[in-house]
Length: 382
Image (cartoon, rainbow, N blue to C red; front, side):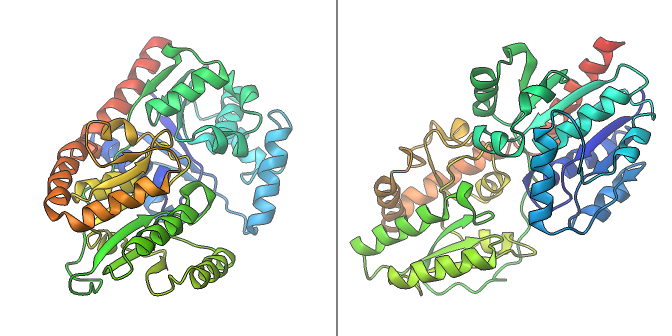
């Protein structure tokens, strides 16, 4: 089998790149040869370099505004790579490497995959792993329909992702394979983060942006403390937060009288130290295909509460009581928080079910599914 090219939209310590790195380590253990193209910098850049035969990257140090403007211009020009973060001449050079397949990891990697395929000397396959739902897909690839004609197959992160691609973008059922995301069992340092005696921690995690719903997190906290003002509960959000958003949320907390009851702790090198102290996990996301954090807290036996219709995680929680509430219904979410707080046995029972469900989503069990899709595409072409 000829070499595979994996296109990584970012080397950041976020869901899609982390999951790709797990998969590549598994591939390496099977002696599969591959190169990696990273389109943006990040903490994992060195790890991608070590694991790949060749790692292509030329990172330009632009601020976020410039980067965003470039992406928007690029996508709106119907396949033109004008302003692309990765130089056009280098993409053209990479296209000469006689790959058998391109694996574009995330929607932001698709245009680069399209361009390399278009300029390739052989008829290689383009496989796109789509982790995004409709709003994010439209936001970061508004010209998706142009690039989509070059796609040979799609891996969807959940059935919710697949349904969106069929309903809104014209793909057929056979064009898409669903493989759930995966992660490793979290390693946490016991008592690395101090937890007050008898304190009940309601956790959340992710970049504190509109998609993850931090506003709902505050509203649930407000509801809980209005009903139980003396409760020893701490709401804790782990994840990157911009300085501007921090100012906004700190002001909200003052106005809601929640300053000492809700905290945004920011990004942490080992967030699992915090996850291990959570009693339950709130996923207040408005749109989340299949977040790795849910796999990780699920492996730790932490009950998860999410909104119906907002995430692929719902697909594996449907049979577990106390996990899904109507979309944006902060009252029902707040009532479940109270139920877990008051009923330790219920929390323990749901936690055991979480461990049972999420033990399936490991690199060892999911990577073989990705690899079989890759092999089927290559074999069909040959």
